[in-house]
Image (cartoon, rainbow, N blue to C red):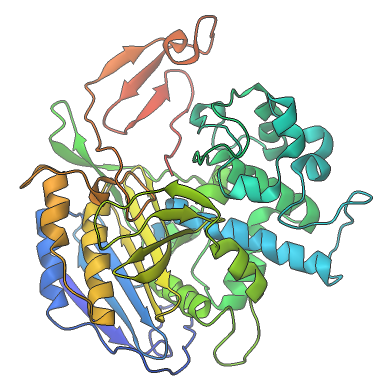
Length: 484
């Protein structure tokens, strides 16, 4: 594998991709650049964890953004840059929750273009039955009539993932109408239970009451206004840029000891389908650095002073509402709370707002420290690479804030069996930073009938588990859903 390590230290006013403009940050007294030794640390992590390629962006309020790139973005050995496009997976969720908040603000100030049902107000506490009416319904009648918008966004509806209940291009109204057939595992607000489907539901709400598709709303109200001119929901636009990553899956092949290129989990036909809300954003570290800079500035454009995202919306989506993990794995970490598309945790006494993402061949992390003026985006074109990303992210935080350095390489490598074996945050599957989770398991290839998966009486045909892609694949139609 070609190993190439690059570092770019550019003012945000100068770091421009061929087709985009960057937004500068406000001046303030925060730490300056990451040390040159960090380049060696990136290379060490990349080699140890067998990383195909990765891109890092580090933002400090009032200082130059730094971009680090390592490895390769494709089979030809081309190296990634700050303009290389990656699918963001579940790091897309905060755009859905923020978009609802912007739509809510439109109604509050009379900028709405469609009316609400009589007697209904649009806010975080609005019930779904009032917004979607005949479309909406859940198996449990009480839950169906009492679920609020914030319940969807904080994963407390009582439903598990149900990933095989929809396809990439299932129409959103149909998806919503079919929720009544999905069995819950908990009562409403009983516990945190991660479910991508509810972020698909919120995109239906946004589309219905904005009178445009969800993706058009986000592009016009967030991407364009914030200057994120490369960011999109359309994978073909990324491919046309000629600067995009191929995705690699490890443990492929007949003996699970090969790394192979796999297709993107996003498809152009599915742009306005169920995946757009929970995991449909495609971006690069340059645009995400712009986004993080504006979040650190309270949603205000640093040049014009315009409030691009209402502060009340940011405060609401970042507020930790539900206990996701009540105990931290190490003394440097903190318990994790879930808000609305963001998680709230901490590192060495400093608050972190973050969300990660993981799907077939992709690992992502987007985070910022609101009280310290530091933000980090970490993107990797390999599956299950969060151990490497966390080892890098924690070192960036330590250097940015002058904190005690912890040997996260040893901790994370130990979780993968490279050195010592101990349970810790590095065994994360896709989205949690700072908690203990289950380690991944390598399953041998196996054949299942539909009845094995869905129960007696199922008639969906034969399904087999294809270890190479890490998902069930229907033998007669596509059913390989991304795990966001």
